[in-house]
Length: 223
Length: 309
Ligand code: SF4
Ligand code: SF4
Image 1: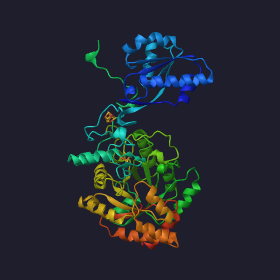
Image 2: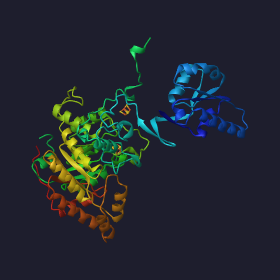
Image 3: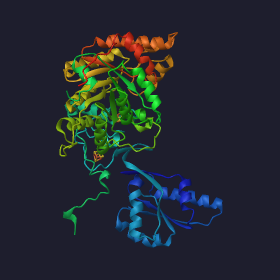
Image 4: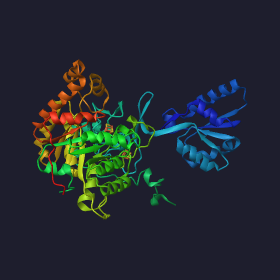
């Protein structure tokens, strides 16, 4: 899933300062699962803001809606009326949702981000999420025992582990696992250590963000 | 001859090589370079110039190397892939070789989190092993990375890389060296050695695979200045282990600097006996003035002369 984390209340407050009628828009997909921008979090943020405005003696109207997902036109359109009635939409979706609500609603509508979109990751344990993929566009997991060196090695090395790997930890921080140590261990357990003898040549970063904004086109699905 | 550098000639002749290290200034003060360089002149065969080591911003390795060439000294240009993509790397190699630089050390580099520009984006377009492949293609095929584009002129570089026998997993460390050899490296400088047993164990694996016949290994040493430095390095520097008995010697010593020098000379003696070790690399960080004394006491002076051409 796409993992997000809500921005600090103070930053959100500052963003919203010029507006009197706010619509907080949650998303029912990834950010709901990672407990950053689903229906529950919309409710929490709304009451935090209401309390804040009350203390400040400000009259601000706050609406709350949570869509099934914000990255799909068909789920945004039924809510356009509410969106148009507000001065501003505070989207609690990932950066994709923030942008797409704006695209669908049109340029008059101001959509602000309530989250910092972090990464593609998993829920490791209660209250902990970790990155697993960086969407590099050309997956190498078949060569690295299913552990991603792009997202999980601090230097994106393809021929690791580097000289900084110590006791299974990455040189950047003893809290961080060395991805290449994990790859080594798994290959060893599978009796495939010889895979690490091969030099992986320089990666083609064109399919990654380095190649510019990306699109997937499936001719078989186009009308 | 691949590059015709002094270092290459000495190693090819079978002489025991000595290299030193110079960290450029955190600014453009040439006097700092001159001072450090003069301590090394005549005492080492080539001088490594670090490339923003530990991600601390310093004068560029290329510019510093070019200044050393002007001073009649031989540099080993270190280059990390942290700060440059393959375009900048190859362009810088053209420039460096045009400026008379003949040795290069291929590194991925310390992560920027260690440095003084922690908010920087890193590059890591290629890694150190791919960098070796890249330089080798430029030198031996006369092409850019990818093999398509021919280059004008000739890139003549003696290609080096690092090895850290003290990093984990230990059994992979010799595999990593083998990969660097396969990629085309000519010489290796190791991380500084304090744990002799582990280094010997690594060298045994190296010779078992016959790698010592394909690459020149220069054993890295760093003289310890004080007990505090020994303790600090053992605890804080990634990839360095210092045995307790060395720390104890440094802590107890009345004259710590003298003790540090003594340990260093003993280490050199021991390293010279190890099969496959073709030289030493002295990294006297911010203590360059100690190098002449260490080299002298170790009986490594005068440095062998090789013909200029
Ligand atoms: S190799 Fe690329 S696509 Fe595959 S998991 Fe890693 S970042 Fe994602
Ligand atoms: S220690 Fe491991 S994870 Fe960290 S940069 Fe080196 S190889 Fe990558």
